[in-house]
Length: 266
Image (tube, rainbow, N blue to C red; front, top):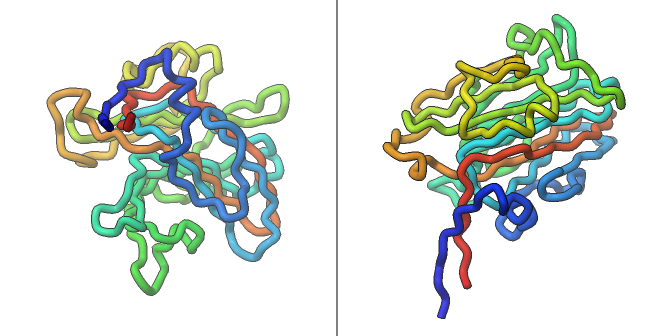
């Protein structure tokens, strides 16, 4: 007889959580993304005439996370973007469409560059289409620009490059009982990141050694709840965009997640 159990995964089960991909969402026709479940990678040289986009999600669902985004070739990645998708789920009206929030980043610096944005996308049916399909004539996706991709919204002081030449950001987000999401792009060391829990973080009181590069709150993102266990838990995704005639190499490290649950049958 089959029974459905909800498994609430704690810290000890983190390896298992990232090792299962049977329920993941993905869109990567060129197979640019690889790596392991807890350290996805991207390596792709775009020889086509259009931007190439790809994403892959975790198989489990969460209400928050701390994710390190690493550009391995920041000097030559140009306008390429790497980012974190969260609240990724099937559209309520179209099972072939998805809705999500995205925090996008680039390794570019300078007063005239755009290296940071936050948007909400709904009814995405074609990840490869221009701007996730918002310009499609039939059944276009909807975008709500929370932070516009523009020079005036840029991260003005990028994190220092590591000794190996890589450039990294840490992305934090968390669902709040009031019905909001808070998010931040952070600069810190791995040693500090390993001590942090998304559950305990707040953009209003970050620990010593953590620099907030950008932050914000997404108001009225979902219906307010009275208990943490009732917070919305949806998938997290790793996202990359590579412009024509450009090569991007990088990876993502998951340092922590907040609330993880998966229903399995046995």
